[in-house]
Image (cartoon, rainbow, N blue to C red):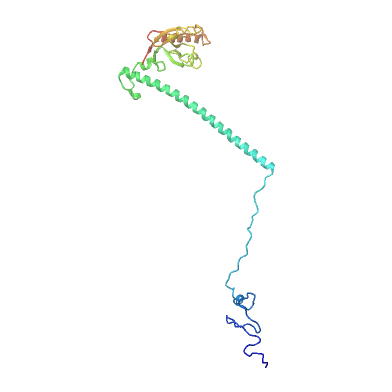
Length: 284
């Protein structure tokens, strides 16, 4: 044995492993060296073949499924055709809307005219009822309350002018029209009582102004118009109005001689009805 060798200091000293692991022979374990395959820093748990059996595999990411587009692209010709169809439909709807609007206006106008006519008729009826009530002292609430009163048939009440006209009992089918568009006038047609037929000259639609009229004129205007034409025969004056009888003596409606005589008789009866003093009176 060499005297220089120290049995207590072997040539290849072994440094104990602080973790209690025995390093291979001839190698010194350095726990502070991360590159040491046997050091503590690189120690890892032992992996067994069945160690990861309980874990689920991580699914692979899947790309989103893109459905193919079902929208059909239109050609320029198809688009033009659709626009034309749409324009025609909208045009038809617009025409229908305008038509309905015009119909509504016409219907509203007709309704207003009918309402005005009904209102005038109602006012006339109320005036007659009021006059009968005043003259008889009896309240009129229904047809049964109307007394056997001569004035209801012997007089024509005209509430627009507040006058009444005494009727001639020798006249039948007496009709009249009231025109207030230019100069207010009321014109009559009729025939003598006892005829077995209805003559054409007595038709108010065919002969509206041919048998005698009563014209209402403001008294301040005098007896003739601005052209110097006479208003006719003065019949009655009350307040600011005067009433004149007017008829064209040269006018004859009938064609045959028989009816001309009947027409002349009816014209004379209507004239007497409108011109005899006291036949035209005012009423409130």
